[in-house]
Length: 271
Image 1 (cartoon, rainbow, N blue to C red):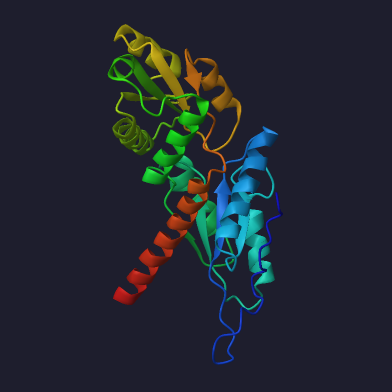
Image 2 (cartoon, helix red, strand yellow; image 1 turned 90 degrees about the vertical axis):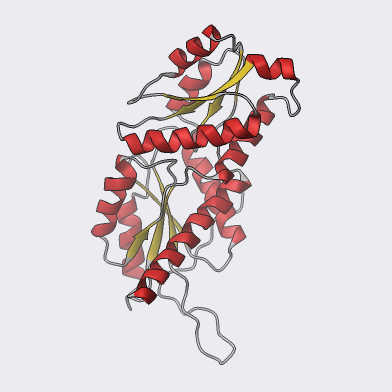
């Protein structure tokens, strides 16, 4: 994997057609949760490399909410220090799958203390590109690409997610489950590793009682870790890998970045 090379904020941008320096675009700061599992950090760095490769002129950086370095406040402080002229801002893209406490409170709180202008993008989910990734991971794990009618009648998916006490987070996960169910043509039941119900185990029992015995556990986690491993261990048939550094994930990160810029630019023009 090639290292992520990110232009430093404050450096002159490329020369434009009239000999003037173009300003750099706002930096993209990918905000990871952080994990004690070293595979998670490796996955996030691979994803960053994909994003950087898709848009070479974009400064791309990483900050974590907890557990891994660099922490988000340190990343923002470094950007502010490098940008001595105060001309650069940043768009923070959470590597999170729904609206919860981290998205609504932790990340905005850290951004509010930064010494540069920041904008916080929406979380990655729900979005059709997540469904593309989930489908790919299921097929990689053994999900049939053209199941028979009989197979569909006995099949289902448990969408295993981290969980949150925030009802908006559950709503976002439900939306992803409905989109995936439409894609697969079988029931998809959201279930959670913590903080919300149902659990993966109880969702599996309920599906078995309804005659659904070919049940896959779809890992709705951005990277490997304790919760993803625990949920996969309950799978009675097959379990997919986490979303990881799938190309669609890199495109989704850039989509959230672009949406944030378009929304804030539209708002400033309206004002």
